[in-house]
Length: 237
Image (cartoon, rainbow, N blue to C red; front, side, top):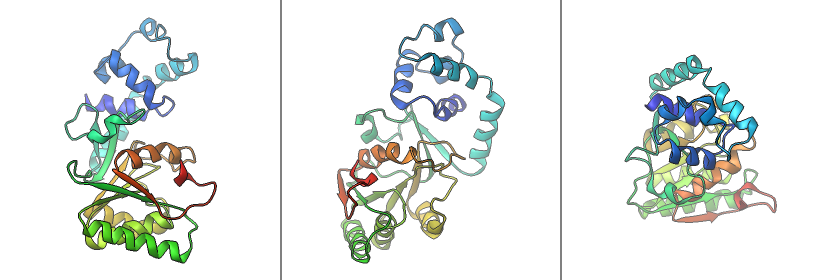
C-alpha cells in the first residue's frame, strides 16, 4: 500500500486539499488508484484537467515504482497519514500533506517547537541574532524548525545544532540540497535532526513550492519567530 501512497504524494498537479477529499472517499490509495473511469469522472470537485492528469498518472506505474525503489535505497522514509508517526500538529492545518518524505528523524511530538525564519539576503546583525536565538532556544530544550534557506534560516539552524536539535522543511525533494552552499548544514541536519518534504525525491526547488512548504514550517511549530524580513518576503506568509 505504501507504493500507492507514494503515487498519490507524487501527483503534484493535485493540491493537498483535494487529495484529502479523495482519501475520505477511498481511504486506501491502492483502492483510489484502481477506481474505474466512470467513478473518477463522477467526482464533481475535480476539474476536467485534474481528472485527465489523475487518469494519465496511472499509466506511469513503472516510473513511480522505480522512484519508490530508489527512495528506499537512499534511506528516505515516507510517513503517511495512516502512520502513527505522522505529526499530529499537521493534522490541524489547512490541507495536511498526505505524506512526508524524511531523512533523519521527525520532530519529537511532545517537545516544544519554534520556527525561526527570515530573509535570505539578511544583514550581519540579523544573521548574528538568528544564530544566537536558535542556540538559546535549543539549549532550553526547544526544537528549531526552519527552511534551511540561505541567510536567517541557515544561521538559526546552525545555532540550534550547537546546543540541541533542528529540522528543515524543504521546498524540494529531501534528496536535494538547496541551496548547494548549505550542504554542510544539510549533512549535519540529517545526522543530528531531520530533513522533511511533502515533495517526492527528485523534485526541483520550484518557486511555488516555497509558499506551500511554509504552512508545514508553521504547522509543526508552537511559535513562529521572524528574525528579519523584507516588506515582500516569503517569511511574512
